[in-house]
Every structure is written in structure tokens, then in C-alpha cells.
Image (cartoon, rainbow, N blue to C red; front, side, top):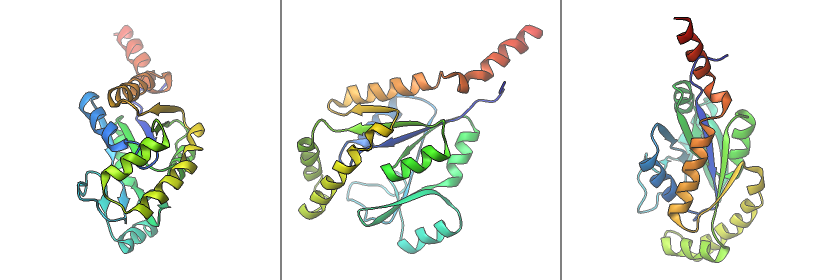
Length: 207
């Protein structure tokens, strides 16, 4: 039996505009001991985004140097820009037994699932493409051509939802956050992550 606390890796994906950042922000207010990996990206920062909070906004040259040195766990090109997950923080948090959430697109998520078979994967969906379109236009961060491009990508991404362990509908924010919280709490109780409790009980009985 394992006597150490097993870390848990959670992969969160969903189309642009599905509300991943909003749901994550609310989740962090309600659930303890969670670390959210901050990805690197070469795309332009939106006016409301914070460097080091939503993403690390880097140059293409910096990203490619990190890639060559093995400092990126997974990466993908989405809508003409690089996105990637820094490797070192993930390894450290997992070793500490923490719940680590990766917010990544479907291509990167597939790589993570193959690298970490015990990870938990969650796909966030909007109530409709019409609502998704409204959300993208409301952000006022892309022009119409870019938004239409994101909507086309979203249609393809939605077809990959069946590859995930869970699908959450983000129609009502409170319900979506509650669903995500329930998934994390339940997955934390899986036997593969709780075997240390059995050893602790048995060791206590020997005292």
C-alpha cells in the first residue's frame, strides 16, 4: 500500500467563451488546496487579463526556447498561437499531494491524458452555440473574423467532449461551479488516492 498522499491532476477544457476562467475563479473561492497551472501563450493579452494569472504572455522565441529545453509538459497551436504547460510546477505540486488543475485545449488535454492515465478530465460546454457567440462578442477582445474562427474551432472541440470523464453545462454559473466542486470532492475519495489512510489506521492499531 502507498503511505504518501497521491496528488490529483484535473484537466479542464472547453471552447473559447465557455466560461473556464469564471468557473475556475469561483471554484478557488470554495475549495481548498487547489493549484491552477498558469500556461504560457504567445497570443496577445486581452485588456482584462493579468500576466501570471490568466496566462504567462511570452514571445514566440521564448516559447520555442522553453520547448527545446524540455521545460514545457505539453503544447499545442491554437488559432495561430502557441499554448503550453510549464512542467516544473506540475511535478512539484503533484509530489506535495495537491489537486492541480490544467486549463488546456483538447489537443493538449489528449496528450496529458496519455501521460497521466489517472488524471480527471472535465469538459465545459455552453448551453448553445448562439449563447457562445453572444459571450464572445460581449468580450469585445476580437474582431468579427476572429470570433467566427473561434466558433468554427468550438464546433470541432465539442466533438471531443465524449473523450472526457465529465461534461459540465455552464448555463447557470452557480450550478456549473457546484458540479465541478462535487467532481473534485468525489475524485479525491478514490481508493487510489486514499490508500495512505488504510496504512495510517493499521499503524495506529499497532501502537
